[in-house]
Image (tube, rainbow, N blue to C red; front, side, top):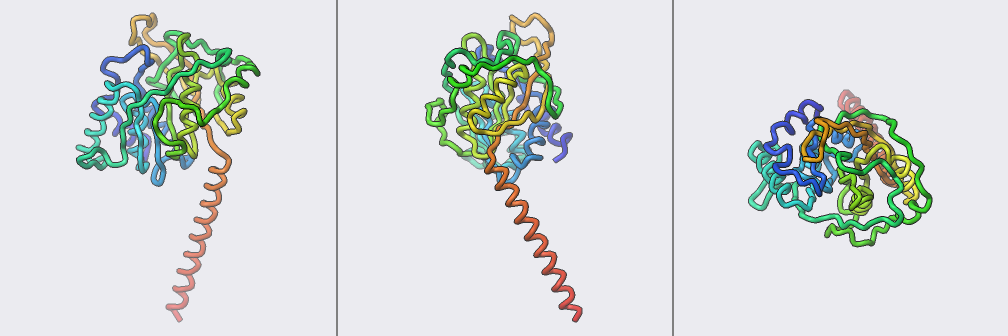
Length: 306
């Protein structure tokens, strides 16, 4: 699917923003262009599309998860703690069914499931070490301008103590009542955190890693990049910055003093070595099968001529 076609489908959704955004949940809309660009990036890495299952953690009105569904991912789970946001997401799914863009039955949309659950916040010992100014106005989900590649952000040296105290515990109760490794890919656009929940984005990341068996796509402030990359490597996982973008935060809350505020954000991809190796092996087998089929057809043609 081309970018413009995916954007067109997403633009037709009745609920692309929160009716009454909740500041404590740091709710901001995800732009159509941003959602479409992310999904096409995941498609290019075989992390979305047919034969994949997806989970959108902190889905809001479902823009990202729905974008994954529109490129024919087998199953998409929309997970959020806000009942009002999930009602808007449900209306979006019903619209897709009416337009026959996804299949539905009496029990709900086939391939799309809504789950209400909240990521449990555990305050990290000694802080996150990432810096980046996690204060008011420093968060955004909307109107992102996306560029692929390694972008530049404000650099701060991560603390070795913070890395050590922020271990990955896949057996910890994270508040999400879903089994580990249940989907191929998790996409999450987490809260960036305030003084009251500093490090909540890392908690979302940990939960996403528990739920995924192939890859995780997650948004984080560019200023936290040195800390996050070192932290994820300490967990024995691979990570790459697949896009750098600027979120244009619109003036939505009373504490916003500027009409629009730009925040530099990274989209990171966490992935596993064995997954990439399996993909490569499958590609080799597929190419081999195609070659054998072509050879067989070629022989049949000569046999018929004789």
